[in-house]
Length: 157
Image (cartoon, rainbow, N blue to C red):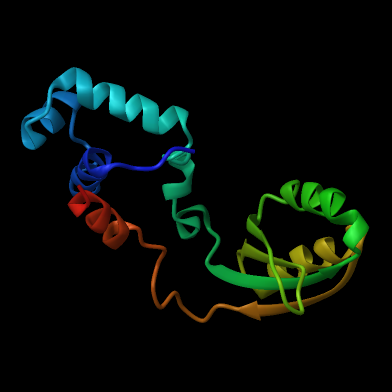
């Protein structure tokens, strides 16, 4: 993954303001050649800077109103197998290897508490899982945000 330079950050901020801007509209708004904007967007996509479009979809729109975080203690020798098995569960939307008491922190979505029970039971059935602890999110106090970091990057020269 390559670093975002000030022009990349300005392009992304403009798209954050209006995701429907065309390459031509972006070039006019930023005072940059159309080919430059097009090449920059292509490079950002190819280098993994821009995630998949599906990451923008709110799980609530798919009927998953409940968010929970599952802290997992696993057998250290099975981590690759465990994370592969977690990827097979569509309700698992993030997995982080962590330090501290938990080995993995897993973000899951569920339709309701009964559905969450089904998901956590499936997680417990994965080889190498020794113990889990689940915390239900009551509400999202702040969403993932990148705008402030992009604004700082856009100011850097």
